[in-house]
Length: 131
Length: 143
Image (cartoon, rainbow over all chains, first blue to last red; front, side):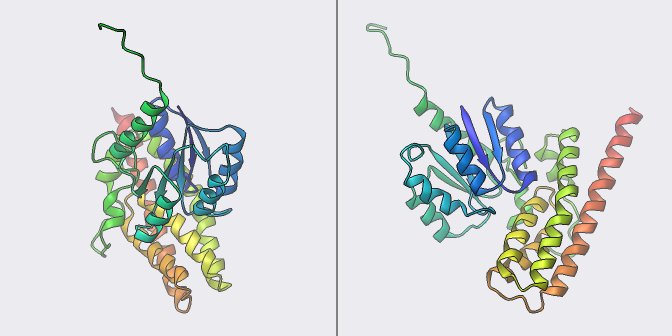
């Protein structure tokens, strides 16, 4: 599963990348919102991990553009934010994000969320009749 | 920071969730090591990233304070805060958070002393991290 990781803090970005690669995900890292948009358009990922607070346009701006894009609208987005603000959370949820994680990201819950997305993306093997 | 259990986080939770006090250690070593699962090579890599990034972030905050650019102060302090939290540098984290709030609220009067405090705390955090990695390498080579 291809994950686009958009996080401007290079230390946080590297940590998350390390963790996700360790779990078998293919990760493409970017460090600002505009690069995230270009990367997503160029090679549509299976999931986007999006920090809301980045240079080059905000994560919320990214979500608005995504909503208007027929290519990217259906790509699940997991938002990561350091702002534990119910308003930010509501705004992100209004843009149809999968989950909002407040930093520090709980990696167990991130795993659960990613596995949920993976199970939706992977077609189930039909059970033969009588099995 | 990264860990592999149910309580693992991408940053040490204590660094962000509790207010820092002067009694706090410069770095929370236990959290830091648990987060990288004692992977010192990864910790070294992260530290090098931080050493390379933090001067530019401090310079951006300084320029924002001097130029009364509240948005720049908020953004750079926010990013620096996140990076510091990854090492459990709670006191520096708190100093960055205070400047982030000043920027968000557009209150940059009196931000100069806060910046000086942040700069000092970041310096302590860098030294503590460097010392820790030096000790770890020394122990490793002595085995």
